[in-house]
Image (cartoon, rainbow, N blue to C red; front, side, top):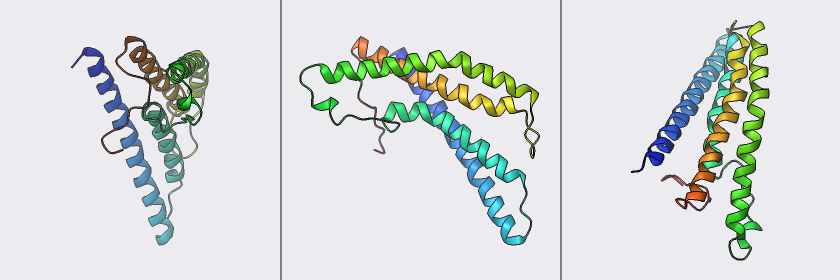
Amino acid sequence: MRIADTVIHILTRLAQWGAGLAFAVLIVSVLIQVTGRLTGFAPVWTEELTRYALLYSVAFGAGLAFRSGDLVNVDVVCEYLPGRMPWLLRLLSAIATCAMAVYLLSHAWKYVSIGKMQTSPALGVRMDYIHFTVWLMLALLAVFAGLRVLGMLTGTEDGKPVKTEED
């Protein structure tokens, strides 16, 4: 296994674990909320925690969705073009995605830094921890798009979404 494959595997696993953990927190929070409503004691903080867990699951999942082709993949016309046009369009799409995400990273960091002065009403969490999800999503999207570009240019992949064993 090449070093690049190992790095991709580690990044993919970290994103999967992050998305899984965020989703587990979301499930527990919703269960507490539903149980609380049935018993007449619904803690307010569960709604906030659910919202934040959803943000983290999206942040970790965006790069994974790009990698697997589940994010947005309009290939109805693209894949039926002749010759190397489909490959070229996949390359340009990955480059544009990576470039846009990288460009937005500094702007997202400004948004994160604004949160240092705010706290959430129910949990009292500093909002920069919550706003960080925007930066994280862009960073992971840039990384996975960049890895696709690199793989296409080195010939180790064709730019088509990488499907997992479950697909």
